[in-house]
Image 1 (tube, rainbow, N blue to C red):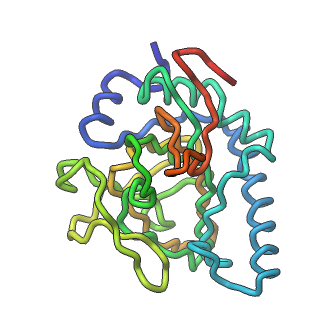
Image 2 (image 1 turned 90 degrees about the horizontal axis):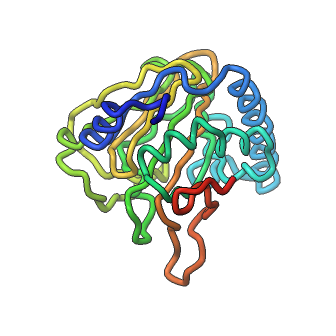
Length: 247
């Protein structure tokens, strides 16, 4: 039986598409992951400088960053992504087969971190797939002022199916919901985790504070997510297979 996520929380996730878990990751681990985040931001800035650009896909230099698939060059990330806490959480939601699909830092800079439009994570994945699990781990305390995530229940969104999204000019965001429901803000301390399905609609606001807002998004699937040619879309790192721990 899991000591991190209760049966009631699992049922809430199934019903609403999301649930909040409190005080899951130790502050010692958070500090390690914060340091890795800053290292990767510096690398991304250098990469964009070398290209002579301020915008690279959905990265906006000095404003908003999405820095993905760095775990193989980071021992602290390996320890977190394949640690006992994430094992308990992912087994409880996904069952006996768990694969790391994607991990990425999501950062909004101080005073100018951009909003992120209403979307489903599955809206960015055109390949056929089962809904997967997104684990949103703040590396800083988050609230409405510094751009936390807002979530819509399945009932509020009117669906638990993947919806085709449209591209927003200027930001390169994909948008899948145009209603007027503001959603539920996730007010979290660093070390808490918001769990949401890849078909749960969510957005985030701007960062209006004098400090950056950093998050590590960890995503796990119950089967490999592949391109039409059979190659991995992102990652296919086995964590649990047939109920047996692989890492």
